[in-house]
Amino acid sequence: MKIIPLSEGSFTIDKTKVFVPFKLEEDELKSRAKGSLLVEVQPFAVITGKDILLLDTGLGFSLDGKLQIHKNLEDAGIDPLKVTKVLLTHLHKDHAGGVSVTDKLGHHSLAFPNATYYVPKEELDYAFEKGFPSYFTAEFEILTNNSKVVLLEASGVIDGYIDYELVGGHSPYHHAFWIKENGKTIFFGGDVAPQLQQMKSKLAAKYDFDGRKSMELRHKWWKQGQEENWTFLFYHDIKTPFYTPNR
Image (cartoon, rainbow, N blue to C red; front, side, top):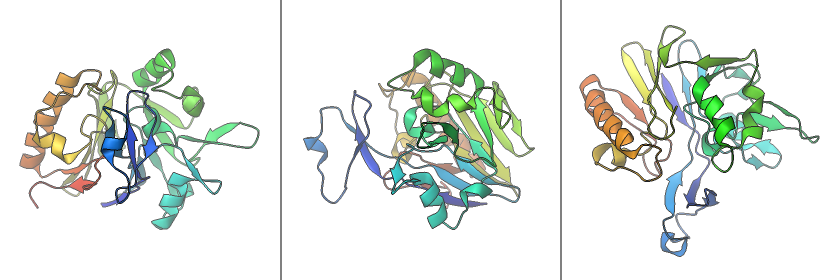
């Protein structure tokens, strides 16, 4: 399996939940609003024997009229039309902004029209109930009643080699994914396991729906991942996009 980080850049975010670009060489965190967090926004492509997988879809920003995640894929040598599966951990705007594209008339269409989208069913329902500012529902309304969408229940297996599980923690219906091929496991815990340092420390984050549960899950996953030699993907890590503990 091949892992390709698709970084959209570094940002700070505070209680307003607005993502403000941050240049590591120029900007200072202390000059941002009190309580601002510094994060990377980093979807992943994973190339397997069966698929070109996309794990979460970024902020949905455009560069020169092109969706940034499309450009990042092309820069990595991947045609966005060749993406076969889109796996979504949850639908917060920094993870689901690139689900769709908008034309000049304001009409939305799937950003990856040849892919099957795998979406946590209860998370989708909750997102429409909760709405702004955590969820931009207009960007993923196209996921409802769509033949290209598979709604995920509590746990199961996709195509015989991708395990998924409803884990909660960061959002009530957040999912995690385990991609297993040729004796190797790639683990993607989204915002429950967003950064390497958080895996190694006991931190109950205030921004989580259930900070204690997220902390306990990280502890469990880190221990299991070391025993089973998982490769962890970190969506919000500035320095370490992916990491295998025993290498």
